[in-house]
Length: 358
Ligand SMILES: Nc1ncnc2c1ncn2[C@@H]1O[C@H](COP(=O)(O)OP(=O)(O)O)[C@@H](O)[C@H]1O
Ligand SMILES: N[C@@H](CCOP(=O)(O)O)C(=O)O
Image 1 (cartoon, helix red, strand yellow):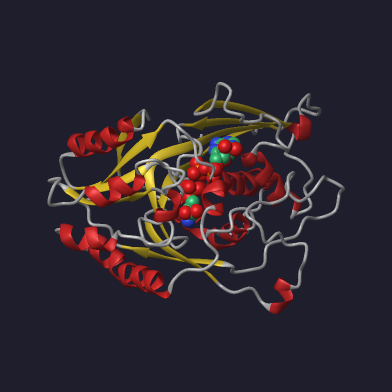
Image 2 (cartoon, helix red, strand yellow):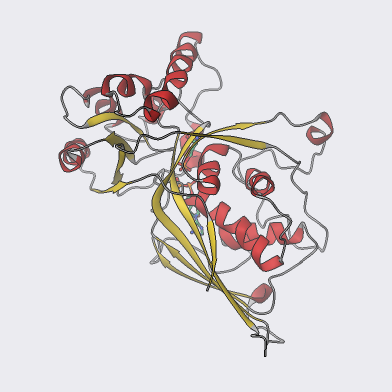
């Protein structure tokens, strides 16, 4: 007899966006994974849970971290509902249990929200049986929620990626129901009135994969305080001096080449990771940032290749080939001067999101 229970695991990597000069362009998937353990019990005919979905959570922010277990409010299930409702499915199948295991620290610049959005679109696809949705189409859905493609692109496709957006057609620009803001209005697609939410335009986001030299590891130094990405974007100016734009353009042309070369050239990578478009402004939210990026060099720190803010911060990402403990200790000592406690991890490039039947 066919089983009435279906189980699968969605595994999505964390990410580090920008890698210095690649603001809203470059992303790197890294080896720390959000997991969704999903069970659908089709023998059930009623559910005691809203929208037929029981959400449970363990991991970062578990105690008092503000992660909602209401499927219409939780970012992950809200995104899945958005995908479902675009396909005329109002709720999860009877009865769905989504257990979230999340080791990715929240609001630290390691792409926790990007991973939640990517895992959420996969969840919508899987529970809805929407097998026609390709990775590229799922990227469109992600971009309706996170408007910058770098961290979701890395979490979706994996590896070291360059991402770019195709300008919307005039017809799509005229679709006033499409939220051109950072996030979908909550709840996703508006209150469930039974009306289909706005579907994403086709082919918004694109990506290209770059080589990554196998010797290079990513040391993430994670301060204990949070910087919401939205807040870290508010401090950025609307316009930039031409010299600063040119400075970044020169470095972004180098970065993928420098990080793909084996053996890595520390001087080239150090130069290629400098930025003038976001890090100088985010210093106001991350005490010690400027001192760290200006004082840590391959000449003073053996094994170091370059250092930057991870995503919108406050995590610092040091790329290195050796001496990870010494490099982390040095960066932690700068934060200690500001009475900020940190943890740290050595991470490696990761593959993109996977779904495994169990
Ligand atoms: N696994 C998750 N489940 C539900 N919500 C999440 C999850 N991960 C992140 N979030 C939401 O995203 C917020 C952090 O997003 P953001 O400020 O963009 O920081 P980050 O740099 O970590 O992506 C969290 O406070 C939480 O509301
Ligand atoms: N390019 C974005 C990336 C934000 O990444 P996150 O991991 O901090 O959410 C930015 O720099 O704002």
